[in-house]
Length: 425
Image (cartoon, rainbow, N blue to C red; front, side):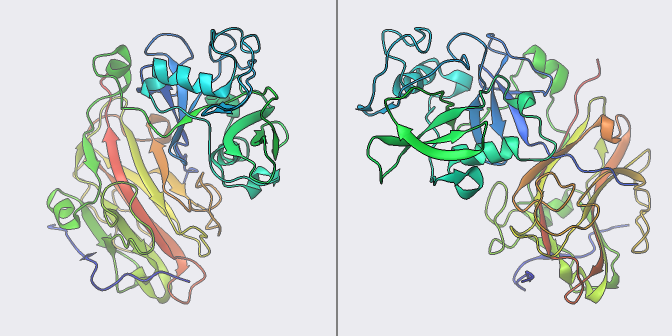
């Protein structure tokens, strides 16, 4: 099924007054002991600005990162206890780090919330639904954590969750068919099973809280973050046009639609009101044709350390392949708009392409398919993003053999676009 845009949704038509690299999704974000987002280069430590947790951008959950010693030592084991139900354990299996309490999951949760690890007082065991078998057959939080970390191409588990034991880990969920047994996930064998709460196993805690942003006034802020030079959530497309966003319809043949306000019946926005994203679909060309639909940012000032961040997705199944090019222009007003479905005008700098080979099926990395859920992408100096001068960013919905009768093109959304510039050294 392809997704149409209701006529009641606003179409942005012409607001003008006048070799692709694989896309890189930002799947994880490091978080400090104090609860602030950190650059990928951050290292583990005990200081407030040191790395201690990692946010899984896909699930929106923040997980602790284990250490080699101390309270969060990966070698520690716990019996299962929750609300007085279960086993209180002993003090030795976790190195007396919870004494006088025993080494049990409830005491561990209480301790993390007491110290507000990574700025959160809402730590807990992972919940959700589990069934015997591989993690792919369960939708519980710990099973999804495993799938995202260990079964995603290009992800190095030790880069985001070092010291994690490849062994059974507790969840918060009791096996309703077997009294006294708790669902568990094995990080070494990709298995889901239940076992008695009297046994002692590792526990990995999670919170729905996330980082509160970069820490103002810190050395991290000074070297890595600054107020965005551009930020757009597409809450109001008319307002976006008045702020300097431009569009161009260069499909062949030209279809009945361009970029439009997102349709929440297809999927809701990444942030803000349900329809607050910009969308495009197969109607951008005729019954069959080539889609070339451009969305250009206002003029921005690029500086040393500039980075581009945005979120995009298609429908969950991604049956009809979509493709998005991300381009840049610098050194001019970038007003040389492409005049055909194959031209790129002033936007000769290719930062990357999401689903470059037009493959069907969802892929969170954007390399072998289009993400089927909102996914964060980031481009920086290594990708060719300009580091000085004035210019624009361009998003190009570029799909051949598209349209209602074509084999490609369906529906994409873009949301939460930010260009952040870090100060020069």
